[in-house]
Amino acid sequence: MQQLEFVPNELLVDKKFGIKDDDKVYVSPAVFQLITQAESDAELTKIIRHLDSITLNDTMIRASIHNLESILPFIGETERINLDNDSVRVTSLRLLCFKLHGIKCVKCGIEGKFFAKEKTKKDVSYHLNLYAVRENEEILMTKDHIVPKCKGGKENIENMQTMCCECNEEKGGK
Ligand SMILES: [Zn+2]
Image (tube, rainbow, N blue to C red; front, side, top):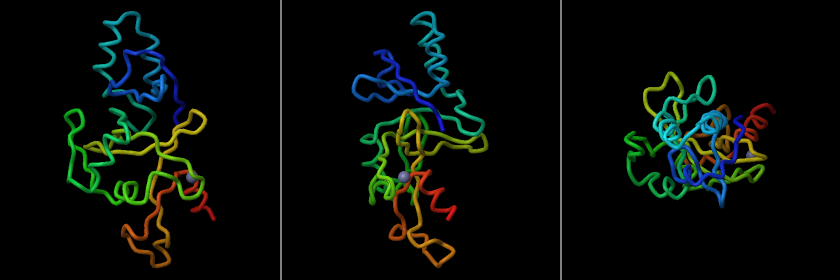
C-alpha cells in the first residue's frame, strides 16, 4: 500500500502525477519526496518531465493519475484511448465491471477515487488501475467472481462484482 501525501501547490494541479481533491493534491510518496527536494520552479519542471521513470514500489511503475470522469465514459465504448501518448486498452472485463457495476466495493463500500496508468517492470504497455483512498492509503480496486471459478462460475460480466483488494483477499482466505 502506498501512503499518500498532500501537496498544497497550485503548480501540481492537473499535472500528470497529481489528482486534485478540493484544495489538495494527492501524490505518491516517491513523487512527494522529489517535489519537496526541488529548490526552484525550474527544477520542479524538470522533475515533472521525468516522472515516467518513478517507481512506486518494487514492481509497479506509475506514469500518471486520471480523474474518474476522464476514463469511465470511454470504457467499453472504444478499444483504446490515448493518455499522454500511451495507447491504453479500455475493454478489459475488470474495467467493464467498474463501469457497469459501479466503483464501490460490494463488501465494505469504499469507492474508487482515481485511475492510475501503471505497468509492472515486466509489462510492455501501461494499463489502468482503479484506486480508492482510506486513511491516506491507496487501496486497489478489483473485480470479484460472484460464483467462484472453482465452483463453475463463468468468466463473464454477469458473474463479476466490484470489490476492493482487501475484501477480496479476505474472501479468498475463507
Ligand atoms: Zn472492500
